[in-house]
Image (cartoon, rainbow, N blue to C red; front, side, top):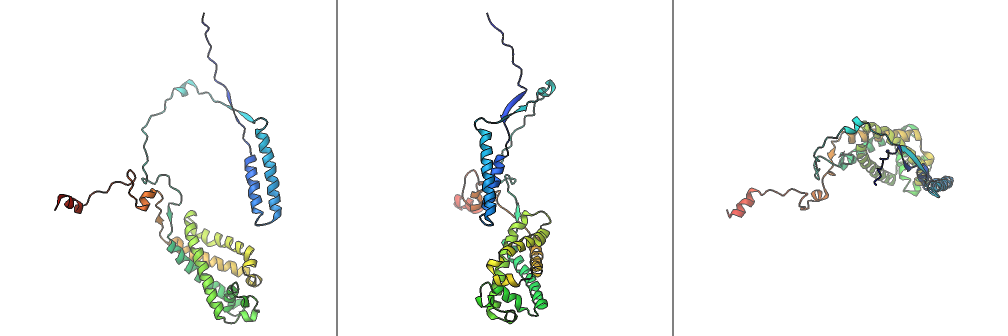
Length: 293
């Protein structure tokens, strides 16, 4: 005697792990704790407390029993179930063809553009700084000596009248510090500009100088105390904007070059790799050599 088994209806819902926010809160607590190491201890304490609360909440989401939720299953109708997907051949991608698996940016600015932009930006920034010296102190040597005070103790402790006078060591060190810093920032602009949207020139000319000014304002007391006590932040921000607008314009106008990241390492390094680099065709010289001609 056989018993017929009736087919079981499909389940209306399936049990899935319940979503939880505690991992995100835990990561936020760790970030706050690390940020407090370079800012203030209160931030580290708050981050530690937040991480502890997140760890406890995460623990109770898993133990003693895991939290689940029911996910409703939508049953297809007979007409929808009868639809068959179209079968198409799979096209295999080859290394270095049609830029597969590319990472942004696809084009970058050459480093030489950063050097040129840094030099042009340095000239524009120096013009604003010298104008500040003439208007506020009646001397173009005043901003130069203030900049060189970071490396010359005599200038760091000099009076305002002494800073207005010409100093050979101040001029030499000021030019070196200003030139090297401007070139380094220009190269940084060249690396960052391709990552900005189409209005990259305005991002580099306005937003980046303002962020850079805020960073310098928070650290200048440690780097150059003499400049920090005598600086006029309105003129300083104006000089940073002059650098960003002029240097950013030069870098943005430079023709971009295509990156070679779509090519495999063997191709970029010039290594013979069967299956990756197509075999070289024999030239006329090789044919003649093989035939003995």
